[in-house]
Amino acid sequence: MKLGQKKRYVITLKEHNDGDIAQVISSLAACGFTVERVMDDLGIVTGITQSNNIHVVKQIQDVESVEEDTQMGAQ
Image (cartoon, rainbow, N blue to C red; front, side, top):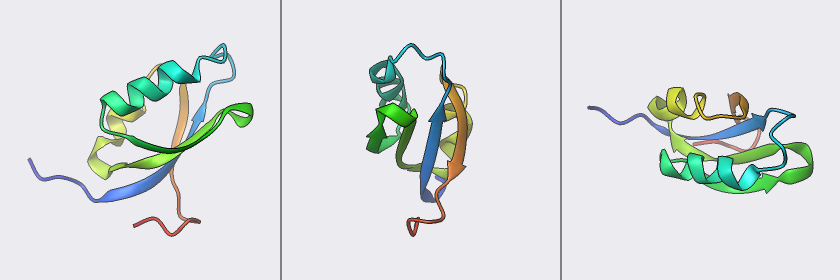
């Protein structure tokens, strides 16, 4: 299987995640997402993963949306 290009992403969490961002971060790490920044108050997590891994990230409980971060010079 060919690996996708590593890119930086912004993940927005669902509002009703009961503040359990630690569980979401653990799930992200388990699927190969490298967390760079966590903004608890905003429910936002940023980090890097292979582009072909995004379909897995989107399936994690409490993930509302996943968008490529084009403002921070994603590579």
